[in-house]
Amino acid sequence: MLVPALIFVVINVSSPQGVPHGWGTPMATDIAFALAVLAVVGRNLPIALRAFLLTLAVVDDLGAILVIAVFYTEQISFSWLALSVLCCIAYSIAQRQRVRTAWLYVPLGLFTWVFMLNSGVHATVAGVVLGLLTRVRLDPGETQSPADRVAHRIHPLSAGICVPIFALVAAGVDVRTIGVWTAVSSPVAIGVIIGLVIGKPVGIFCTSWLVARFTKASLSSSLRWLDIFAVGILGGIGFTVALLIAELSFSGSSLSSAKVAILVASVTAALLAGIALRRRGRAYAALAELEELES
Image 1 (tube, rainbow, N blue to C red):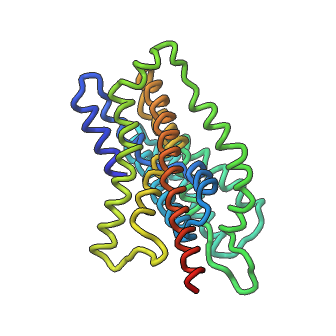
Image 2 (cartoon, rainbow, N blue to C red):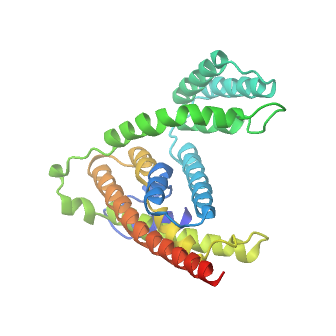
């Protein structure tokens, strides 16, 4: 996350037309689109690679939401925020008391969202907090935790309707007002594109290597460092989350440039990741055939 943001800041600080406060735009990974690309080209790849991508995307998105809450909140109404916190406390108590009825949780969720929205903090934070408060451990006799059950029920609505609608609405940009070349050659666009396409894989790879080198964590025996770099390229698909932060960071022609850059960078990252992951898949397929012949 830090490498793309740093690249964006360096490019925009060094230009008179730069907008450095939009540094949060190239930070996050769009998990839905990244998983879709992996599903298409991920044949023969280790299952651990999907787990790594999921972990990466969750951490990235949580970090992006934290950035939104801390750095892109202009004014906070503490009375509304206190009401939102009270709803979260009530939600947590209900989870601990094993309350199972949706008639309680749905109103609590809606009130939390409304109160958070009116507080000045971005309303997406409400969803993150409620998700973290939802119980993930199984009780005796349960086959599915509340978190898994909610995710199973909401995912079709979220992935099939909400995310596509948001993407279509947020990605709309009239390049006739500024011109395509002007849009992609501005410091904002260059910072976003380089941050996502180059900064993300470099940051993900280097961070993973440093963690494996200096902590007790280690790379899964089924993975190679080339796999991590390929997934790092896939992490450059920012799209919906990047568009969300761009809406909060920019206005006018800068916003148009950022949107065009996000689309260009996400498509480029998807294509490059597809090529890299397909090659890794072929390598694993060849290795499996060799092991089968030797046995």
